[in-house]
Image 1: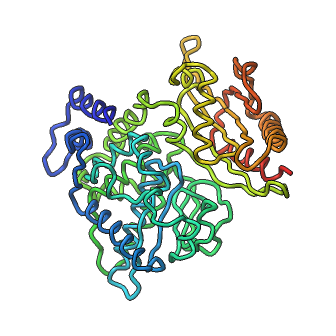
Image 2: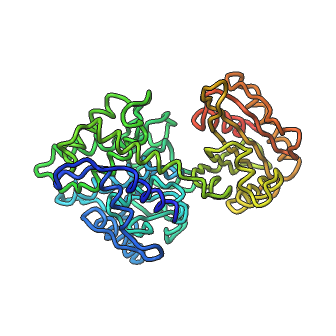
Image 3: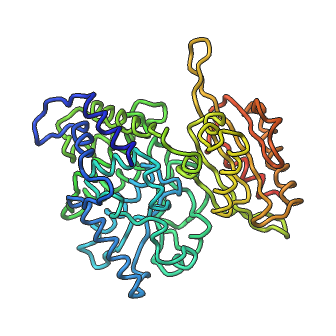
Length: 455
């Protein structure tokens, strides 16, 4: 946990908060204050309505599970990458469902589920910083994480009232038995949950924008508005800010701006300028997000991991486990992070991690910047590895590797070039370098289509 505290104290000593009235705390001041919230190794209980609600909801859910009342619960879940957008959207909608129906004849019990294990949450320092700012309990004890579910999702999904997907177009295979009640996503519609309501797919920088807009629209139509804690409002602003680069990047839309302005008016920063607040939040969260040098290779692979089972037409291997990692370091820089600082050690650590989570085929998407002729250039790498010890034998693994290899090579828009050490790679291993803007949203469908057609 040291890196977060180092970051926060660095901000405290290097930046000076603007002089503003105590009733209008500056985002910077709040973020800096979070550095002293807890003592290392000792959990500090969160303060404020949002933390208390989250902790009480988690307890109630577990009590009801013990009493076999799972059918009363709606689980709001984001994607397994667990970024700030996915986490915030889930928390916001779960809070809204509970509070908007509490005085009706059909109150809804809802809880946000973070589809990452608890020990992986701090691999995203920006999440920790934002949660500390929202006065949540240290150690994330207020939040329900995947490893805290008292029952396997395959089983639990049959018992609960249903699921709501946020920042996620379709449920993971382990949740396929659950009824999809609503979907909010800013990616491509994958056809899941055709009867879900609301069912919103819209291009915005942040999925939290879509959820917050719907939340405020419904809130303002209620006979009497429920209490909206400022900690949640500021968490929402944080999620939108980091995904939109403070409302300035090309992905930012009019809806991101309008919704942020509506949220800001209800927050403790209401009298501040929207542009200033969002820029300030983005600066601090982005600085935190980059504070990853302390992470080893295994943690880098799992900090932004997305994977699922994929059906194939093969009668011998009808299901394949496929996973994607996103790593903000070059392959060469990752190798230096291994114990022996050698290529073989990268693949040994990678193999141990993928064996632990039973993955057959994995793709690591690396991105970094290099300087050429005085200008920064964005470089990406694709690392393809197929295993033969989980569900498939060597011959099948060889065949699957060739299929995915050719699918990527044949996508000319990527402009793939073999990595400079590709000649040293082992069996069913390949690393490419490219300079296109294609990230996981582009690469994943190419790989999934190839796997689903493999026979």
